[in-house]
Structures are given as C-alpha cells and as structure tokens.
Image 1 (cartoon, protein in one colour):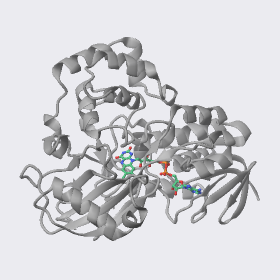
Image 2 (cartoon, protein in one colour):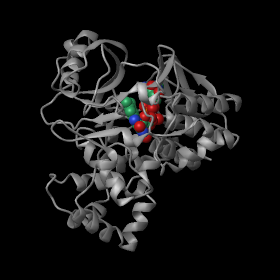
Image 3 (cartoon, rainbow, N blue to C red):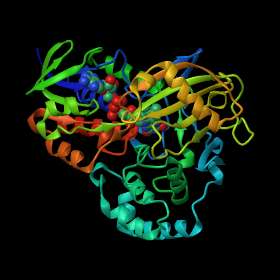
Image 4 (cartoon, protein in one colour):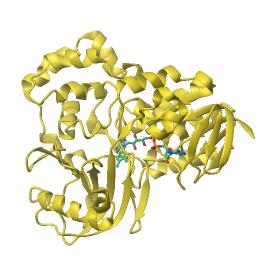
Length: 422
Ligand SMILES: Cc1cc2nc3c(=O)[nH]c(=O)nc-3n(C[C@H](O)[C@H](O)[C@H](O)COP(=O)(O)OP(=O)(O)OC[C@H]3O[C@@H](n4cnc5c(N)ncnc54)[C@H](O)[C@@H]3O)c2cc1C
C-alpha cells in the first residue's frame, strides 16, 4: 500500500515530526525498530520508581521542548534540577559544587566583552541549525580567552552556538562546559534547568497519546533494512510512501542505502546506563547530599563514569543506596566479550566507583541499558550533505546529529522536516 508519509524512527525527532504532520491533517505511519517509542529518552521502572536511563535535563533555552510541555499539559509535572547539589571533578579527585565553580575573572570579562559584539550576540542568542560548524563564532571567542585547555573552549562554543546540551563526550571535558554557561549566561540561566522527577517518559507518553488520538499508524518491532526509491524494505515487509522522514540514527549501514553520498554515516559513542546497588551510601567530599559527579573523560581510558546520580536525593528519598551510572565504552579499545557481559561491566563500574567513592561498595547492577548508538559525533561535512538532500526525492531528515546532540535538536529538526512537507 502506498502511504502519504512514513516516519522512520519513533524517537523525539520522529514523534515531533509525526505530531506536526498529523496536526496539519496528514496521514502518518511510524516505523520503529524497538518495542517502545521514545528512543534515547527512556524511563524504566526500578524497584517501583521511574528512573531516566536516557535524556532528562531540559535546559531553559529548549524552546520547542518547553512549548510542547505546555501544549501537552504536563508542565506542572516539571521540577527545577537541584544544581547546587551537582558536583564537578575539575582536577583529579577534587569535587566542586556547581555554585562554587568559576571561570577565571579575566576570561569571563573578555568573554562578556566579545559576546557584546551585536552580530555575534544575535547568532548566539538565536542558535539555529544553519550555524552548525560556524568557525567564526569559535575563532572570535578563542581570541578572547586563554588557551590553556587545549582549544576546548573553541570547540565548546560551536556547541553553545547550537543551543547546546551535551557535547560528544570523546571530545570535551564536560566539567568545563557548564561553568562557562553559568558565567556567560548565553541563552539563559542554566540554573533554571528542569527535569521530570517521575521520568521524562511522562512527556513521551503524552506525545504518543496525542499522536495515537490523531490517527497515526504505528509499527513497533519493525526495522528499516534497505531503501529503494520510495520503498522501504523492513523486517516487517515493504512500505512505500510519497514522503519519507528519516528520523532514525544515521549509522553508516542505513545511511549508504539512503544515498551513496551519505555512505560514511555518523559515528556514535557506545554507552551503558546502569543502576547499581551499593552496600552503603556513596559519599563525595564526606557528604552524601549530592546530585551528580561529572567525571572528565581522559585519553586512553576506554570507559569512565561520566555522571552518577544520587537517586536518593534526586527522587525524594526513595531508592537509597542506588546510583545511576553512565559508563562510556569505546568499542575500539574494549574487548567486547568482557564488556558486553553484565559481570564484565560490573567489574569496570566497581573500578571506577572505587576511585569516585572509596567508601561505597557496589553490590550489583539492578538495571542497565546498553546504548549502542548514544551520542552522535557528526562532522560538518555530513551535516552539509544531509541538508543538500533535504526534500529531494521525497526524502526528509531529522535527528539530533544535525546539531548539538540534544533533545531540543531532535524536536526542532523533526518539526523542521514536517514543516518542509506540509
Ligand atoms: C544517557 C543519556 C543521557 C542524555 N541526557 C540528555 C539530557 O539530559 N538532555 C538532552 O537534551 N539530551 C540528552 N540526551 C540526548 C537525547 O536523549 C537525544 O539527543 C535525543 O533523544 C535524540 O532523539 P532522536 O529522535 O534524534 O534519536 P533517537 O531517540 O535515537 O530516535 C531514533 C529512533 O529510531 C529507531 N531506529 C533506529 N534505527 C532504526 C531502523 N533501522 N528502523 C526503524 N527504527 C529505527 C530507534 O530505535 C529510535 O527509537 C541523553 C541521551 C542519553 C542516552
């Protein structure tokens, strides 16, 4: 059967695209590989408590996200992130609370001066996908600050120009990014960042409910395997349509099938999110009242605890002694047989944990998610190629790889693709 519009991938980008099209009266079919919708936004029940294993921080400058939260009627479920409890590892084993983290005054002053240039300010305040990879912003900012962090600020500012969430973790020391946001107040006050204490799944559920009510046809457990013109060969038979929104990750296998020009695809980091039970409350700086620790990636380390969240605090006293870890895994450096087993992963987590929380003994992994494609590390070249193909042959593209990898980019690109079809 030939359909009007097929959306491949039921993550935020795909759902936003489908919702926008359905509201415009279009007929939409969604094809999703997994048995659930939401993609990398994923809330799982752990011991009766909802825990976010994927994207959860909603920054104040996420305009589409905030707009949709309101439209879907879930705004009252949102809460401010307790950032004063967030600690950063700025030097080896020195954990600094967020509100004590500071850029040197001279850097801050120069940065403010630089960002005062009107044309630059417009670009930074209104980040859009067109500024992806814009060297001018980086170069200008680079000139204003000391270069003692191996060009990190320069790379970072490209991300800021996008509306920023996370930078690809292989390239940046996360700890350096948020202080800069705080000092310069680019886009908005980072201290007004939000999350859903009962899980971001609330947002996905509300969106899916609307989409279903508007008549979307949804195929779960259906993997796109090959593309031929406007026919999609999937694990669940063939689908064809006048317009196709590719809102799945753009890994090389599928990218080359869509268009040979995209053969290189996007590289993604490989992560595990795991909830680990501990014998005692893990402490940082002798204090168990902490939110998360950003553990800076180091060269030649195949994995690291990037964030660990004290769920007892974050989820209002429930789940004491449980921590959510995000552990990065670099396939090139890791023996897949060891890492892909739960025992191997637990051994690696225990090693990291001993460094971060010497007094806390991890007992076991309670839940885990193996993110085989987590953070896109997109190059300017591939983003340009995707943009050139946008709309050609009935193909449209959406996903977080088109800007800074974040929930906002996913939503915005999904909406952009839908608006281009309408
Ligand atoms: C641990 C973690 C923490 C994060 N924290 C934050 C945060 O705090 N704030 C923030 O803004 N962002 C965060 N992110 C990033 C954010 O979750 C993503 O940027 C965003 O969800 C990506 O949405 P997407 O729709 O582009 O891709 P996805 O959500 O990956 O959606 C793609 C969908 O396509 C499906 N699919 C893939 N291949 C096929 C195929 N061949 N056929 C059919 N379907 C297919 C997938 O199953 C998936 O459902 C985090 C992510 C993770 C994993």
